[in-house]
Length: 151
Image (cartoon, rainbow, N blue to C red; front, side):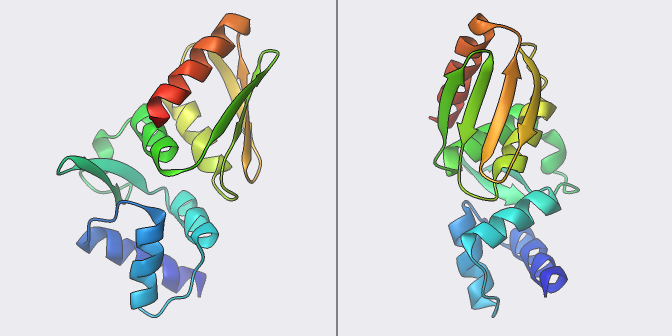
């Protein structure tokens, strides 16, 4: 079932301009697949789908598509932060990023891929990412940068 659903997701994002995970859930439902937003979020992460610029907005694309090869970690991160409700709090030299269940890995992977010099590393759970920063000033800069990216 999972393999068939992910294949359907690939077909949908190749053929349609899908902006949000909710749109993806609706498109899957039209194809006969029942999936929650959390399930689709895990599929998006496992498949490595990216948000790419298209016609003044951002849409999902497969990682091996031509459009996806131009997407940086920061662009991927910005897309995630715009699409998901996210809370960013500081604790010492850590940032704690809380999001929707099933999305922490995608956020952590995008942060790692962005290679920001203030970041030492990330650890992702299901809905929480711990972001280790170099020092307190790096925590403040990174928090502000994340909030700006999220709009």
